[in-house]
Image (cartoon, rainbow, N blue to C red; front, side):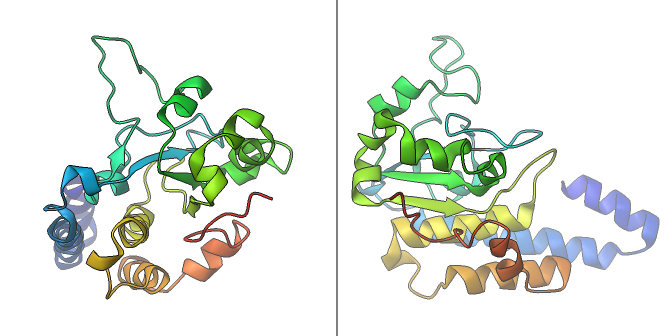
Amino acid sequence: LYGSLRIMADVVGKQQRADAICRFLDDHVADLKKRTADIPEQRRPSVYLGGVAYAGPHGFQSTEPTYPPFRFVGARNLADNANPQTGEITSTDIAKEKIIEWNPDYLFLDLSTLQLGDAAGGLHELMADPAYRTLDAVKTGKVYGVLPYNWYNQNFESIFADAYFIGKLLYPERFTDIDPAAKADQIYTFMVGTPVFAAMNAQFQGLAFRAIPLR
């Protein structure tokens, strides 16, 4: 990413802007790590992200084992244990039975899945599939919407916005100074020049950074 930014900056004469973006991203990585690095493993809730887009919307079994927001805040991503030697997880589609077996403490929904419509996609599955209804997170309302971060490429603004929301949710005592929506707008404003969180959230039924009603 940084190499690409600096090549483009050299072409258009914006080297200072490229350097500022690189510093901005580095500072946020460091801030997230500083807030969460010393949290003991036993205090890190287990999490799963479903509905991740890849060249189009997908259902709840689609995930990202290396989902950056989880890694930035040290969340215990149950899909992030792929071992090619064992063949346990070899793709981004996780068997429904495995998700049920894992029974994560928190579920997150990549809201790009809403583009499959009301009768399909991850939200519909969580509401209608009896197997998913057995998950503790579904029973207790610990299912949360996050902004999509990829399609054919990655949206780094949304990655960091999601990371701050997830950090605030999982470890509220470490993020007392953070309002996730305001932080998202701060990030978007620096990167694209305007606070667009509300406009983006409106495209996804206002479900970003909140518990998703499943009834």
